[in-house]
Image (tube, rainbow, N blue to C red):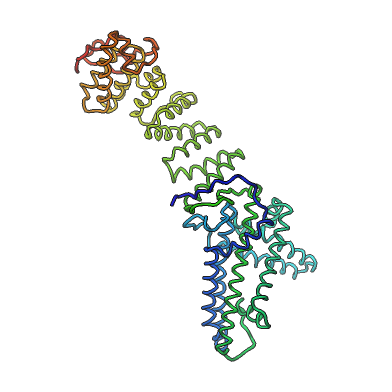
Length: 528
């Protein structure tokens, strides 16, 4: 299976408003992954309740605490996945089957923090009211808390911060960003909450429903003092199962609704949508690929906002994971150019140039080198052994003068360097471009005889073979030189600086020693 999900080819359409998507949202908790969570939580709690319920009549404190802990564990198990549903839906994964694999992004503490928000804020309002706040103001504050609770859930999902989730101004700003549809969301959530109670009344008719719901919530009943008969225990077990399933279903449903609203208004909430949306997908995405797409989307948003420093820092995290990804280096170089810090540009360009040359992407490397030379005159590859490769790319681009500049004096500056034979071949190619075939032939013969077991010698022999084949058809040296180098355009003798000419006094070509007095190469066949 591919690492990234492949969306089917569908036309771009506007996001369906959440009030029109409700029929499909009602089906979401019945998909495989959420339904499995709901069933496991319900069955697990029912097992705990089955063994502990008789103990309520013999050891009510211990059994009651166990029931409460079992209910909390089952609720946390579903709530953890419900927050994952909010997050993934907000990112654009509208089907649980397209969720990234191996996801572990949602902290188990997030639903706990949200539970604390739902307890602390009303408690603080009631305490303030008890200290002397008028009763109608207490009611207004409680109503405001209820209205801002969905926004608090959104803030918790986006920031994972308890302080932001209890900050009324932060939550109010989130609600205002959505606008009037936020009030419609609150109405829908209220209707779903009422709907869950109505569903229980339909599925569990009779006077025992309220008592059973109290038991499921963890409260200790005070009525019967004798153990129940088996028939009533089975009835209670069925009731517990139904209440747990319905509660889990509506919890996931409300969370997917909140997540979809975040997805619909992602542009105003600053959410990076990376999922396929309504497009059908084949396969799922790995958690690592999802994280990369989120970062890339965030980088795009930062660039659009002109925050280049923040964008480069985020992209640096990506580069630490994929240090050889050339596409990331292209983006980093572009961002650094926008940022304008020359030292940072130079430091990255040196690494980027090395990667381009290592990947044999010589054309792109030459373009980067020339642009950096305009910004930093002394810019050069970190590894001097890359100079012949870069010079060869310059010759291929029809820039022999630049090639000669790159390798000038190389053998004198770095005596014994293994790339010296490659430098001599570059010098020969420069001369071929200048229609100085006889001098180039002297360089090539020197390389093939002096460095016989090197890649440069093999390249030199190929050029010499072309000399031999071209000699019969074009006896003139200039014509032979053009044929050997591939009919390169003549640039005149001045195009090959004297730094690339061999020294007359030496018994071998002087390489690129910069000897200006040399005017002719060694005779063919001359050896060191």
